[in-house]
Image 1 (cartoon, rainbow, N blue to C red):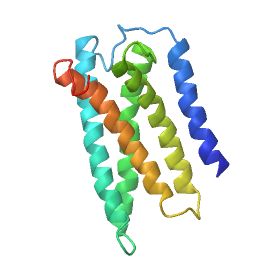
Image 2: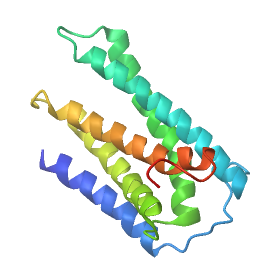
Image 3: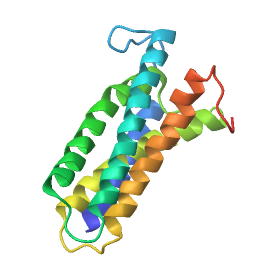
Length: 170
C-alpha cells in the first residue's frame, strides 16, 4: 500500500522536475503539425480524451451498482482506461517537450500542475487496482481524481484554445 502512495508522488514530481529543467522547444511538431496546428490537434485529442473520461465515469458508475457488474462493463472500463492513457501520451509528450512545466500565469500553472498530477493519479489507479483488500471508497476516489485532472486539463487548454484563447475563469 505504501508503494501505491509513494510511486504516484514520485511520478508527478519527476514530471514536474523534468518540465522545469528541460529546455522547451515551442517549434516542436505533433504528428507533423506545429505551431497553431499542433495546438488545434492537441485540443481535438484532448477533447476526445475528455469524452473518453466521461464514458469511463458512466462505466464506473455501472461497476459500483449493487451486485457484480457484467463482465463487458468491467472489460470496457479496463480497455477504456488503457485507451485514455494511450491517447494522453502524445499530448503530454508535446506539452512537456514543447513548453515544459511553467507557472507564468494561473492558467498555465494550473495546466502544468494538473498534467503532472494526472500521471501520478494514473500510477495510483493502476497500483490500487492490482492491490486487493481495499476499502470500497479507494478506487472511486482514485478514479474521480483522474477524471478531475482530465477535466482541468481540458478546461485549461483544449477549451481555452477552441474558445479563442478564453475559458471561463481565465
